[in-house]
Length: 87
Image (cartoon, rainbow, N blue to C red; front, side):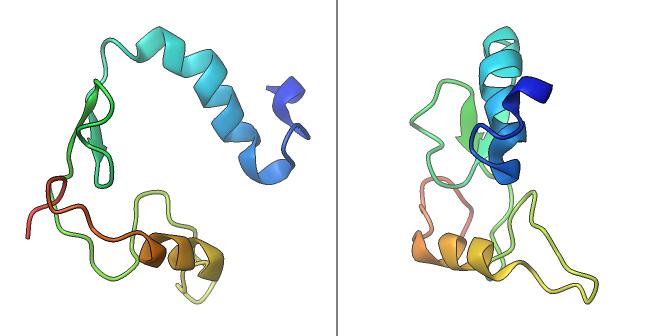
């Protein structure tokens, strides 16, 4: 994992590790919920619940339970894919 720290800065080292080391070993046996591109990837399936506001899995909150603003802006920027979420 140490070789991934610093590649894209601290924020993405875990994503780089998962993408290159974990995903190749599990991609044929996983079941992924995806609220944006559920029909694009083989292991992706529609998300089982509707998104409330800008809430999302893996959301980062501060000590006052407020979501991180840049992440929430990114989520709000992408329209809900009605094929991938219940309405």
